[in-house]
Each structure stands twice: as C-alpha cells, then as structure tokens.
Amino acid sequence: MPIRLSDIMNHASFTAADPVLRAGAAAVADTQLRWVHSSEVLDIAPLLSGGELLLTGGDALVTASDARRVEYIRQLAERGVGALVVETGQRLASLPSSMVRAAEQAGLPLIEFRKVVPFVGIMQAINSMLVSESVAHLRRADEASHEMAVELAHGSSLDQILGVLAGILAATLELSSVSGVTLGSAGPNGTGPRPEGTGNAGTGSPADGPPADGPGSDEEPGHPGADGTVINIDVPVRGVPSARLIITVPADGDINLARVAGGRCVDILSLALLQRMPPGLKEVAGTALLRAVSSGSQPWRLQQLSPAAGIPPSATMVAVVVRTSTSQQLRVAMDKILKKSAQQSASYVDNAEVLALAALPFDGAAAARAELVAALEELPVEAGTMTAVGPLAVGIENAPWSLSEAKVALDLAVNGSLRAAARPASDTGGVVLDVENLAVERLAAQHLDQGARQDFVRQQLGPVLDHDARRNSQLLETLATWLDSGCNTAQAARELHVERQSMHHRLQRIFELCGGDPRGTGRLAALHLATRLAAP
Image (cartoon, rainbow, N blue to C red; front, side, top):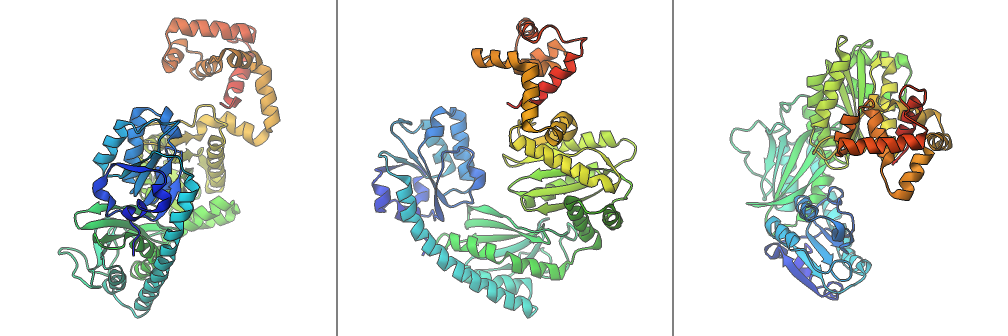
C-alpha cells in the first residue's frame, strides 16, 4: 500500500515539530512519498528523483534573494518533489510570502515546522517505513521483469511484453520512439489497442535511425496529468536513448511501484528493441573508436577503427567532453549539434560523461571549431553541467591528446584552479570551457607542481595580494581583466562595470605596488601569467 503525505503528517515524529501546512493542500491526499531527505543546498533539485519529502532548516533561504527563493520552489515542483518542509525559528523567522504563493501556484505542499526537532529522527522513522515498502516493490518489480523476459524469449510482441507490466501496475503503458512513433502499448488489464495512426509494434526501427553502443538509461520525475500521474523512462539500446516508456498511473495507483518496476524492466525492453533494430557497423565502430581514444590506445588501433566509424584518419578533429547527470538525454542534443558543425562525428556515453569526436573541414577548421563552441554555449542543459572543447588535433593519432586536454580543463574548473572560467556562458545553466583559452592553466597544471605555481604568483603579485587581503579590494581582478583585454583600459572598465576614471585610479595603484607600468617591459608577460595562475 502506498505511503502518502497525509499519513506522514500524522506520524508522531512529524507532529512533534508542530507542523502547519502553508500551501498545496489539494495535493496532500494524493502525494505518494518515496524517501525523506534533508538538505540546506538550494541547488538540490537536479539531484532528486521525485517523490521526496525534503526537509530544510532554512539556513540558505535566510540570505537568498526573493527571486532565488521562488526559483527554489519552482525547481523542486518541476522535479516532482513530494513536499517541502521548512523549519522556522532562530534563523528563519517565518516563511516568506513569496515562497507560499509560489508553492500554491505550483501545487507543491509546503509545510512549516514551528518547533525544532532533530531531522535525523524523522528521517529514520519514516524512511524505515519506506524501505519496507521499497523491498515489496523490488520483489514485485523482479517478478514483472522475469515474466517479461519469458515473453521475450517466446518471441512475443512488444504489446504482449508491455502487457505483463501494465497488468501488474494496473496502469497504461506506451513505448514510443524518440521521434514519437508508438512502438507498443498496453492498458491496465494487460492489453489494449494502440492509438490510431501509429506504427506496428515490434517491427521496423524508430525514424531516428539505428542506435550505437553505450550504457545507461534515465528516468524523468512523474508529474500529475489529466488521467493520472505520468512517468517517463528513457529506454536505451546500446547506450543510445532509442525509445521512451510512458507509464500513466491512475489516481489510486502505486506511483512508487511504477517507478521501480519501470526502471527494473528497462533492460528487457532494450533487448526487445535490439532484436528489432540491430545497430549498424558505423555506430558500433564509432563507440569502439571513442573507447579506444579515451583509453589512449595505440595509433594503429585508432587508424583501424577510424574509417569504419566514418572519420578519415588524417582529418582535423576536436574532442568534446560533457560532464552531466543527464548524459543520455544530452547525447541526443549533442549529436544534432555535431551533425551541423562537423563533417563526420561519433559520440559515446561513459557513465556521467558524454564523449564526442568531430571531424572538421580541412579548410576553415578553426572557424568550424568556434561555431561548435558557440552552439554548445547555447545548448540548454541542467545546472551544473560542464562542457570542455579540446584543441584541434590533426590526425586520429592525436585525438587522445585533444580529449585529455579537455578533461584537464574540466578538472581545473572543478577544483577551482581557473580564475573566472567557472561562470555559465549564458542563461542555460551550464559552463562551456574553450580549452584554447586555457593554454597557460593547462601547461601549469601538467608541468608545475602546486608549490611552484604559488611561489611564482607570490613573487609577481605579492604586494597586490597583500593589498587585497588588507583592504578587501579587488586589484587582482582589475589587473587580470585589464591584461586579458590586451591592456585596453576602456574595455576592462566596461567588463568590470566601473567608470574609466576609477579604472585609471586602480591601475595607478597597481603599478605603484608592482614597481611601475609593466607595458613595454619584460614584466608584462610575467604578470599576465601570474594572474592566470592565481586561483580565486
């Protein structure tokens, strides 16, 4: 039996906090929970799967802007979070009215704890109940997977295979290609006609072409629909999202069972699809090539795989690495960009990374690479996604170098060694690193130890660093921006949003600390190098 939010609100561990429902009352009775989680991080939504009861002490909300608080609510609602609990008291005096309005509009139950209680006690008490429920779900999901495997072994159609799961879930199922063509469907009684105008189940292949190699599948959070809660689960074939399982759970159905069983049966559906649309040689070779590039295989092996993948061994190419929690979905969008920007390309999903190799036109490779970087900057991605575009490499034997340089740049961004590169290039929520702009940082990371880098920065910029530390000033940032602009004072002033006269005053102070105007001297390059190596 599903555990609902209305049940939890009457639990002893919950009532001890003197809870008050501030918004989303209409959703309480139907909200099914899958876990209780505690976090003070405002960017927690991408890490959740939907159905969570989220507890927060409100520490981050105290200093957040009103717009950020509303965005926090919106992100949680979009992710399908079951309810948000905010503890008020010493840190957060009361729930901001903007959050209450946003939660009501989004239909997200918002609960205020007016007494301080240990969150760990609530989590232990309620999660133990949810674990017991999950064990029962896993048992039923394994039964469904076994029965579907039997149907697959007997050569049953996709409708019949889906009918097994639909009957157990008492839900409506549809399996469609990424282009929207229905491949199979089943109703709550285990059978059901396909919608008119759709393709034949179990025959042919999706309009988007054959799949390639690679692991993984992804589930999207369930959202209420007109006929119940809709859960979307990507079904990959050899790592490429080739179909989507759409589960419509009626209002009285078990949403958590549908999530668990749907995810458990993805491998069976992948095998069923694989029988009906086997991968082509080019896709298999492309995956093998990228695996070989990533592992640093011998040049002869790369030259052997490259032609089969459709990439000329002598081509000018560039590697792209994307680190994201939505690697499967993002690969489809990446492939579309690569088809426009490159003559030939291959991509591969390696856990939380999307790896790609793009062969660019021999004439104008640099311009084509710049277009690729610009297209990736405009690609809408989940917050926290980081992309690095490697340097141009001539010949397939140099592709591992381009890939490794891209990974070095990502590692530098993650550990904070890039002065200003960890900012999103646009409002898409991700970061795109052009490795060509990070030659200094890459060289230092690979050939200078941390102590040597710190000593060099200190020798060149010691007085500036001391001034910033004493006065809480921003002379280092001013100097770095000025040097990056080619010593263009007007441009640097615009980038820093300061008046030109203020910029001149700052530069004058910097010159005094550094021993004079460095222009026209050998110190200019040294100062520029030091600012690039000075981590924030």
